[in-house]
Length: 481
Image 1 (cartoon, rainbow, N blue to C red):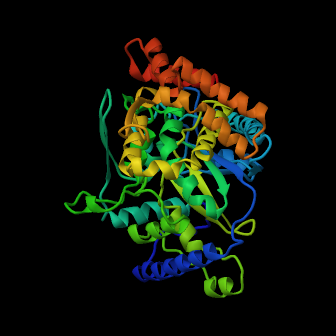
Image 2: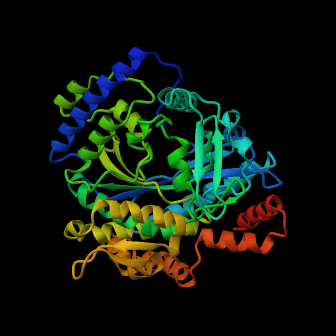
Image 3: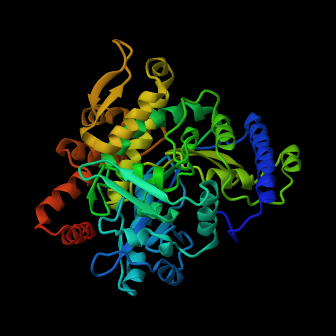
């Protein structure tokens, strides 16, 4: 969705042409992956941090364009709603101190951004869901006014035949509301981690990421409140799935795949399998086509841009998403999308290090475990971790007794710390950095406190009978960090 989009209205023949181009892209991807030298290189890491802006009263402040206009940082960009911004961290080699490098860049960027926001009476808050959000702030009028978001809105409503979005989430205080726009998705702010890997390692790494993401999510959960309701520890997971759902309310539409899926099974044939899945299972939302002669580029040994495929992938929000990038000679990445924003740069880096380390460490063991762990168990774990985070009862594969076993997320996360350290060591992360970041995770697990638990305890402490006032106090407490 970061690609240049300059309009939001399209003809039906443009959708037909985009479908044809998408199939050409897919054939080119298959040819690229057949090249023995494609995508080879050292592992690297990058990330994107989404955040919200609030005013002096801790309410959403819709001035992202004004703040961006004052910034000279090319890594800062607008997000879906007018109170959202996103910062793209520079890619760094995985070897050495990658998380410390990213943390330093992020801290510097946040300091500059906070200064810019202050000129408009604003403050920056990285948090999974802004606790003080109100329903009227998530309707169409709050969308950032640029063509790509209008194109997203139009494309999804075209498939839904104009139906509004209904959000229903269970929890301590169940929520059932309607929204006229995809802007409800803007309530979510995430920390998306990119991990470049070689194509031949993709299957093992991706399957390992799918198995381990529930643990990373349980540790990082930071989104327990939405529209004044106490819901899941990581409410973003349920909200995102419904806020951009292209399935309508008709009797047959539920059979389509969700646009925000955890996955459809263990990967067996590498990255191509996932790109093909996206092309075949999901209708096109934004039918923009390039003039690239894909066949000639591939035949001459070049690296095609594959704009249509990349744009289509950008409108399918797998929680672990395969990414093709034509840059740096062409390469593949796994984008870990499940981690929430906040609360601090150190917390963000610790959560990223833990999940990346678990993925690499498990990649050598995952193939042996798959027969003992059907994919539906991994999907089950993901949603249980989103609901109850460290207190969730998860299923876990075992090869010595009847599989799966039942374990608490907190116990599993503690048990897996050495595996995370092993994985980080394998990709060359400095020992001191590993110890420091995993120490943050260990302390969090031993205390049983993640962002969601802290938010719940804080709200209980400050709530004197007025929920809106208590949520504003909670935001103020978050801003202290």
